[in-house]
Amino acid sequence: MKMLFNRAILEAQIPMSKKAKITIAVIVTALVALVAAFAIYVTYYAIGKKALPGTTVGEVKVSGMTSSQIQKQLEAAQTDYKATFSGQGIAEKSFTPQEIGYRLDAKATAKNATERNSAFSYVSSLFSSRQVDIVHDIDPAVTNKLSQDLSKDIPGSKPATEPVVKANAEGTGFEVVPGKDGFGADTQTLIAAANKVMETQQDQNSSIKVSPVKPLASQDMAQQMANAAAKLTENKVTITAGEKTFTADQKAKVSFVKIPTISKTAKPEANQQAVGEWVNKNKEAVEVKKVDGKRFVNSAGKVLKTETEPKDGVTVSNGEKLIQEISKNFAAGKDSSVSYETQVEKASVKDKTIADGAENLAYMAAPGEKWIDINLSNYSVTGYEGATVVKGPVAMVPGAPATPTIKGNFAVERKYRSKTMRGFNTDGSRYVSPDVPYAMFFSGGYALHGAPWRGSFGWGGPGGSHGCVNMPVGGARDFYDWAPIGTPVISHS
Image 1 (tube, rainbow, N blue to C red):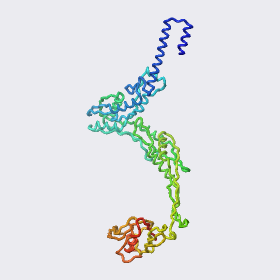
Image 2: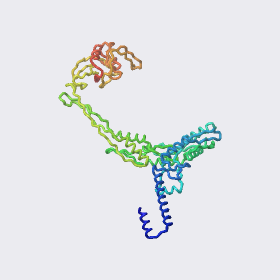
Image 3: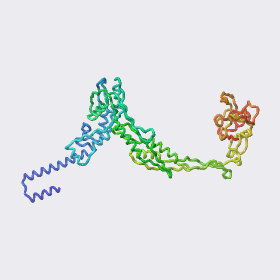
Image 4: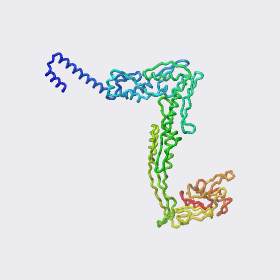
């Protein structure tokens, strides 16, 4: 509008010929159309960030394609098109780039194809072309195997050995193990054919020969990998927890490095498993297992004995987060100074009210609680309910000196009215005792049971049992009928 107004003023001030007026009108109209066309052009390529005119990926035009479209086209190419090989002693065979060992980074390639250096790129692309290289790597293991598969019928064929980087014997640094030449189908021809297929997105034919083949990774590449790995170990890794500090030493940091297969784009990475092992090992010095307290009180509530002091538990709550953070920083060449976050689990105290007088016995039983007392000093078995004797004492014979009866606090595990018992004598010979009556096992093979073969009870020493508590059959029956599974059994001197 302003332009038309200025034009009117100009016409009013300066007399113009009809021809001049027409010329100016045409020029103005053309300029307006050109600006409009350029705006439409910019808008078209800006929406979806399409590749600009003159852009090729390899030899394939991608102008006007979005990053997603370029990516899909490349991914399809590595499996849809093939390179066909034939030559000296090699039967004709075809392989996709992926089968040759070509490892495409379609996302990175598509990103490069659609990037703009500046707004001026919209103008410059109209007068120039831009070829984008395909971002990729080669998997040496796949390519070397294919070389051998193609030449397997040729005498003397052997695979090339790629150089590797590994921790040194001391575990404090890295060393390079050199690669070795092989003999087989030329690996460089295989790679060149895969490259050509991807650059043209067309099938290719290639002549291949059998010859000495060198490792695909050079000694220099391996040394660069070793140097990069060593550089990562310069990172400081520290975890604190209160006044405690845990610092990764050189050996630990060497273990934190994961060495990939050597290639032109490969870089050392963080070994997250090793980082995790180090983080979890050190958190053991921070964490405390919760222990609930246990006290015995009488009927009046007075504490008679504290069996177990309570101890609060401490657990690390951010172990996995630290593993992730340290691994990320380590791979990026950054120090890590982090802290364990802990949670406290309060311990409880459980009071057991015991029968009056039970504090003077071998077991602090609750009022009415059934328990069995095995006294290895006076060779007797007594049944209690609380602090009251309800069974026995019954005389018994314990284990012989070479096979003593076990001591400690146990419970009846299983019961048999009749049980055949088997085991070994001290000389290694086997014994079998059939139909042993009223057996109550309280710890593995240790049991209270009737012993009808014995003529006397109430003694110990040579001639004793294999470890069981031998009782008169009648006494064993009384205890068997009275004590359910789970009844505490206290064996003591």
